[in-house]
Image 1 (cartoon, rainbow over the protein chains, first blue to last red):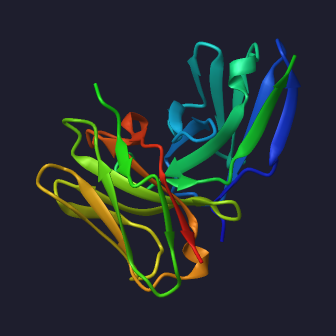
Image 2 (tube, chains in turn red, orange):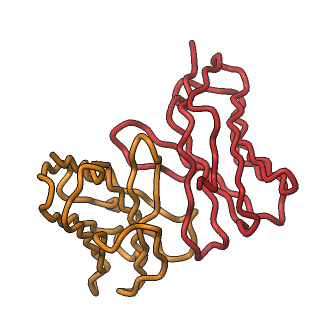
Length: 112
Length: 113
């Protein structure tokens, strides 16, 4: 049973436009959500996080939105740049000390 | 500051064998977590060690085990290898203050024939 779902395996966006990556979760105990970015042949790197007490967190070009009632979060990248082409993983945990459950990832292609 | 290192980077084994993977965390980090990445299942949490104690555990069979040494280095062992164990095994270290302070290594690519 997949508790964190990223239903789009891939996404292509024009450079300069907004990239929106979506993630759904099923476990209502999840309290902390993260996004990671992964380039080929490298380990994932932490991008941005949000706790359940917030509905939005922003860091530069990256914004994460959380809709707890819908059990849905999204990552917005504005404007999209060529270096943003990577696989993005959504992840969740019941607390900051608990194990992290990852989605299967979405491959983002930024088109010139 | 040196990053997380994993050895070996690539490994080929046959079914039934066992394997030990090593992870050296960033200096000062006391938490080490292990993950398995496969195309079908994505990234799956195996276990986390903090100060030599297993703090969290994923849903993997007992063939997967780990340990952490007093210098925070960690090893992961898989016994009686199966074809389905072929995967990228990632190690991540953190000071233990939360997943947003977690740094991943490049992984060990294990192929089971």
